[in-house]
Length: 222
Image (cartoon, rainbow, N blue to C red; front, side, top):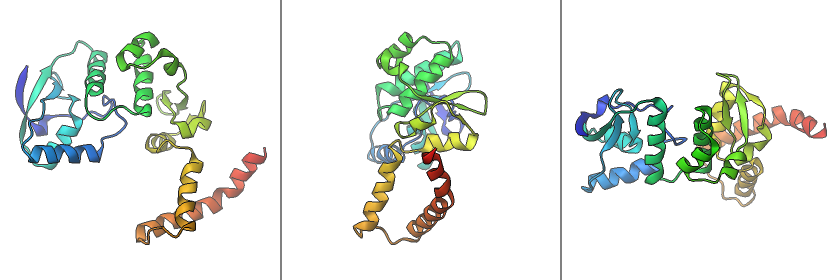
């Protein structure tokens, strides 16, 4: 049912959000559309907890624009799993497409709930064979597993600390050599920025590499 709810009451529960992160670019596009007078669909929420099921980007945009109340599609779910599956299906159907890491996270979470790979395949619309190829690492917090992005496949079967888990989730996804070569290209072709932030980052990178270089090279030799 459609109800008007105060934006301040809506709960952004990221443990139920199918995507890895909220996109500032998407929020900006929604802001432009809203300010131009576009009509946006109601935010889907769980009636029992006011948690957002679909519409994280819209709510972020409403918050930044000082909107007090919005229309919500209020739904009730028998279980937490039903809520999560609806969130996946709704987010899958519109907006920014799931990236590979989103898909892997969703697949692992559904399987942790006891959902078969065949049903997971139907929910997120990927082949079962792709689900079987997901690389994971264990975490020291909660004995869970997390998916690994392509550039971090060397961490497969490692046990990660909470700090390392956060770094995995923020990682861009390419091989580490890709990022190293990008920096080299900036420096060698004299196209690097001359901002304080760049200098600070490069100083930190240089100091960290000098501290770890011998350890990394020893690991290669072994």
